[in-house]
Image (cartoon, rainbow, N blue to C red; front, side, top):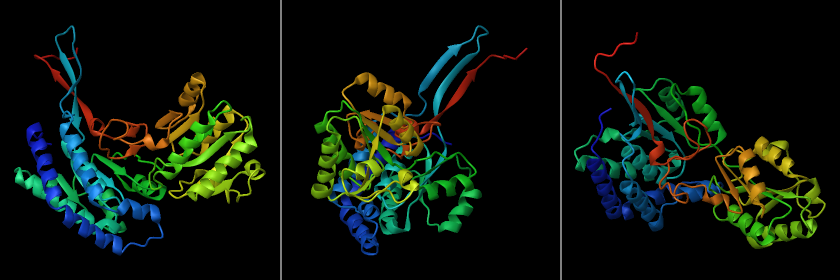
Length: 399
């Protein structure tokens, strides 16, 4: 794949910022068409679909942040010269062609494309039909920016495919695909993993857990739980399960306090395990599968555990591998928790809502990877490259 000069890439991004700013009212009007035809039964999906003035400002800011970052391509990772005189240099290199499959969020059409392009990758965008009008006009903006700077529109392409056409595209792509990122639920991820013929990087579900240890500062625990649950229910970094250690001082009073606050002040639907139900009268978990469910709603499970080890075991068994929290004043216990929990992000005394590229200092993100190869956590600009060995010789042969 041809490498584009950094200045040209940044010129495209500058053009894109100008174009989006000038066409912001058009973008919002096209988004209104999507909103008007959307079934609002799924509030989380509806929230993700909305594009308003603030969201357009966020798109421009995301592009600006990527433009200002160092070009991730062609950077030296390691360099050595062997005793034989053979020089071996390992450098960052583009993946080539990336595909992302996502639903609802038109801002992904901006963030995914800006990251892929700055890292010198071609990208196919497969958005959901519910955001069709929004995505089409954003693709028009990208194409305008590319053509203004003498580049082909093929660098960024929106796909208009139904499920069967998507299956065919994944199993018999019209050109070599190097990486696919399915950004959605388990059904989508399973569909892509079974169908794709290239590498698939999993952007998994949330289903995030928080464990309140016996020594926890209760005010901190409440503040973190409320923020993680209610700040943005449509985020994959929202909280779904709370494990309260039964050895908490005044356990029953604290359970009542938390349940009362979540229910009466924030209108959160509460599910309780058998021990918590003895304290507060809320419905129990309908099935064992509820432990594995990502709610994306004002809904939470309050449960009790009898030990640190039980909490760790339950989190590792049921969580989506996204984010987990321990509330404790014991730094050694927190470190032990962080080391044992199998998640992309682990926290002490902080909300899961920080698992986000912008919040973690990465900037715009393609997704939050819950995979372990080649990267886990926010997929930012530096994570959208692979590596290549450059070997310099002078008639060297292996003997």
